[in-house]
Structures are given as C-alpha cells and as structure tokens.
Length: 136
Image 1 (cartoon, rainbow, N blue to C red):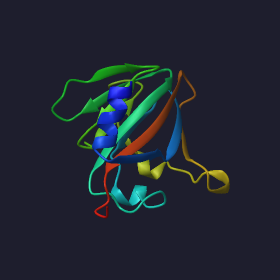
Image 2 (image 1 turned 180 degrees about the horizontal axis):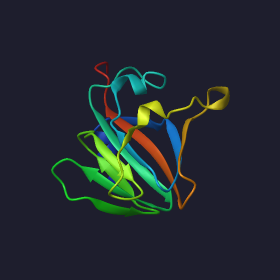
Image 3 (image 1 turned 90 degrees about the horizontal axis):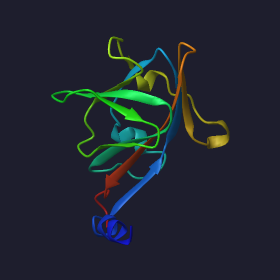
Image 4 (image 1 turned 45 degrees about the vertical axis):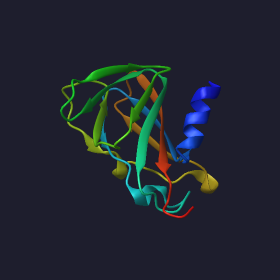
C-alpha cells in the first residue's frame, strides 16, 4: 500500500467524493464527470480520472468500444480518461443522464442520487480525481 501511495503522491493527484448514489432495479444512467462538477470542491481541473466504488449490490458497466462487465460490491471502477459510461441494473435498459438526477446535499454535504424502480438495491460512491489544476 505504501508503494501505491508514493505513486499517487508523485502524480500530484487531488480528489474527493462529490456525491453518493442509491439505485434500485431497474435503473440505468449515463455519466461523465465534467470540470464544472468539481468547482464546488477545487479549482477547475486539467484532467479528470473518474471512479466509482460499489459499496452494495452490483451493476453493469458499459464503456464505448469495450465489452460490458459486471461490477460487484467492493469493486472499484476506474476511468482514467473519464470516458462517458453507462451504469445499469441490466443491459436492456435505456440510460438517463445522471446529471438530471443529482440532488443537492443537506447543509452543503454530499450531493445525492436516489433513483430506480424499487427492486434490488445498488449503492455507488462516485468519486473523482484530477491531475493538477494548472497552478502549482
């Protein structure tokens, strides 16, 4: 773990969690973290590395040009190029833009998404990292 922390420090990465999400099947969202999503927490980043940590349940991840994959509780999705992606409870669903689902957090806390049809639950902590802001 120390070696990984050394690598992250050398890359001068910064980051933070900006929302938490609770989904219930059936659900399907499209997502891509935009620089303006980071503004409340840091100056606008030059490069965004998106990632999502599945804390409960499971989901299907689809990224253009890649085979869909199942992601289970305890697994981390890392999107080093911040690719637009789809997260879903099943492959045959039409995605909704996740930005339309974001609700502000109470008292300036984490924003939230609560979305779906009431079935099997999935909890995701979408997170971002950025590689510097242009000022050192």
